[in-house]
Image (cartoon, rainbow, N blue to C red; front, side, top):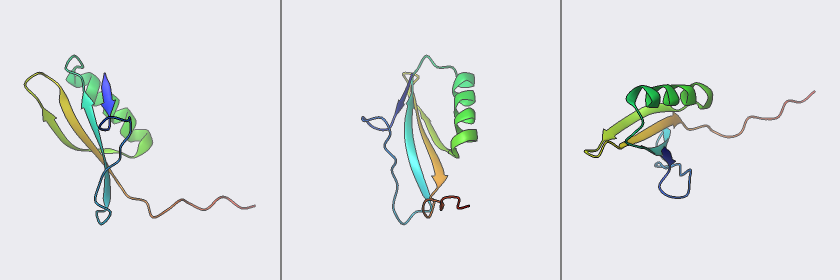
Length: 80
């Protein structure tokens, strides 16, 4: 089981002055390290997030922070 964000399912946090935006995740204790690694790698491949930090707690849960570079703005639409 993965919990994204603090409580509402998708908080992106970070200092507006920082070059990165962060997304906190919590991984359940029964998720193996290999499963978590594959899941994070697939997510990073398609969404641009990279692993910033991992904390493992005595009960086996993991707190993970993903980061990606902030974008300046939306790309302009294709005009024909």
